[in-house]
Image (cartoon, rainbow, N blue to C red):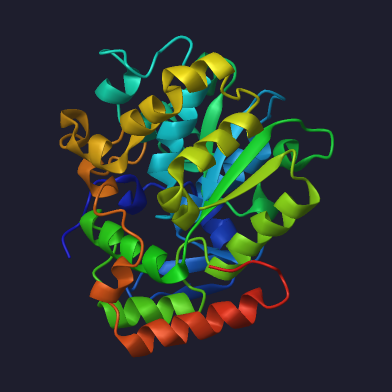
Length: 325
């Protein structure tokens, strides 16, 4: 595998952080990259350094909105939808110069731990207008205290996906980003061991699921499969959660369908801006974020035995939670 210049493989680490890393449990992934165990989850070194910086310095505002997920679970799509909904007065969905036509969703809704903190510091949060629309793959229990605080009024949307499809999508993405050259069989082993980046997958999902049950006014839990099966209903849910529900006039004018058309996976993938260049914060090719976006694509990549093994793990881990895929 050739070295990549993107965020995930930058050699820059502060000396203090290197010393801190030496105190943490670590495991070598099947891609030969070390994962470090911190607050119950596994991270690559640069992601962990960015997370800790974020925990120490980020101050949430009550109007903040966060798009959260494990990697490759519909994050790009939800970012586009959230941006279009919150900004539809200023940027009508039918506008020919809509920001989603000229900018990648990941540039419009940057990740806390990759775009704002850590070694890259590609963006300045002080310049962000309110409400600030941000994203993160960080588990709920490791979010900065100002986000999780009982007094916080910021909104968190979490999109989850069947683990099998998430695994396949992440496998393709990491290969495209030059981070990993694992075989699919080894990637499955890694997921089953909970060693995937930001893993274990099931603990990540359950953390947000439980919080959504306890605080449904602050945390909205979405399933990628539901978004694909009934997109209009799910977009209405998101709009209502964000406090920008569609008016009767907007419904009559077909605004829901306009938002869906603007933010459709196929439409975003076909835009010239998403075919070339790199995302500002991660320096990963924009095209790497648009592959297929299909439910059940795992069947084209995993054997039936692999699928059953992953299903057994999820059934065991989610037992009694009320969460199903």
